Length: 263
Image (cartoon, rainbow, N blue to C red; front, side, top):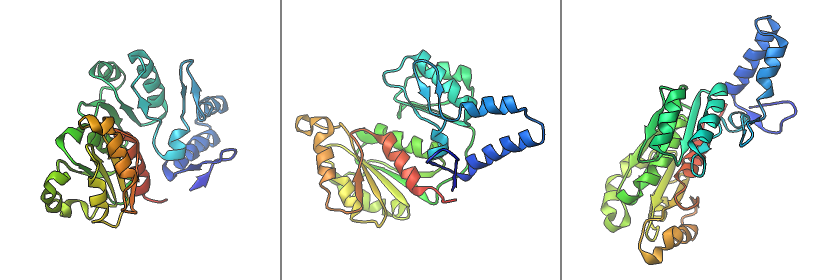
């Protein structure tokens, strides 16, 4: 990993090559100094009044800033997306709608809408960056939308993803039957509502990190996922860590960082 002068983060090899190519173009005269300066001026962030688009996110984390669609207007999302696509090959929007997708397709005809995950992706760079596979496990069918948010995120970040759905503790034999599908994974994301028991069970079966995602699925005393969250936080399986309620995106992102090939 290389250091960017004046910046405390790191640059992966892909982005280091982009910067190197820019400097070589200046050296050979194919790119003017002013044009190069203009391109590099947007590296830290780009202020578009209602948002400061973090173009350094790609340098720090190896993936562009992801747009949270919730709470933003279609116009705001479209403008942010346009600025990201000007500087990056890939785009990911979470918690969004079909209406926003139609707007994004005007910018990028290759955009995809993942209805179950409520996400939009543009993937022009499909380089495999994972060192192994990421397994996404859901306890029930009702948990699949959150599981899909994790799966789409991990896929967009260059990972091989396997989906294993509806294997909760109410029929634990289903999980045991699927064991060959997840025991070879390098990272596992387990999504569950109700009492949130499944991540502990999976954690006790494997030797890799397990990222638990509580969902808001359940009846009254589940308190919209709080019961599952507290159960997962109290897991006695030491390889289990927990993200926030319904945060499939966060789980998929962290799993991707754990699984990333080292330069």
